[in-house]
Image 1 (cartoon, rainbow over the protein chains, first blue to last red):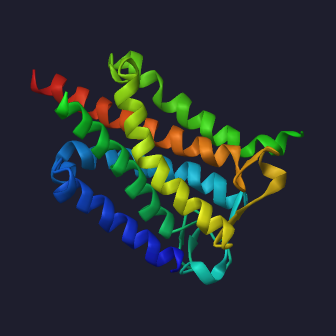
Image 2 (cartoon, rainbow over the protein chains, first blue to last red):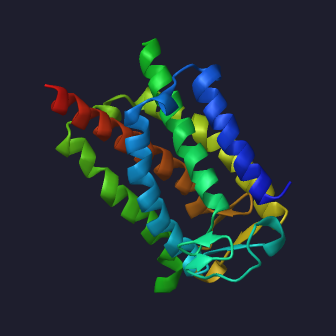
Length: 106
Length: 107
């Protein structure tokens, strides 16, 4: 599977974990979306550093873009492949969902 | 090692510098629950590390040896492994800070 497909899958799995798996339902709360609004800004900044400088480089066959690294365009936002937004969302949501679930069980 | 080798480390330190102070500012108890925190970090880190390992091995992405430290864990830079500790931690701290702001606003 391409990174594009895997990123979409990761988002769906993380939301499924939240809504039906652990039933934490963070994605139905303002607190989560406020958290994500902050995180996505810093993701764009820090990931822009990683991708704009070429610390991480992507195979053009795995992403929407064709291998150029523009600030915006060609499937990129702040130098990073848009797929990274799915990756980051799923990663942080999974951590927060597990955190809240563990807290509720105490 | 020259300065560019620390490029990825710098990004991780930036993330920690931006979120660890939230503990003091909002009197968060996150770091006083090491077991809960470790499990939450692991639950996020493990599946994503597995993904990262296979994506790196299959060449979907790669890391610049000139901008990372020389150490590798299963083909991943040490920083990339640390990323999956730092980012879940930063996420949980941000989430708890947002909750703390919400609690204050409701008081």
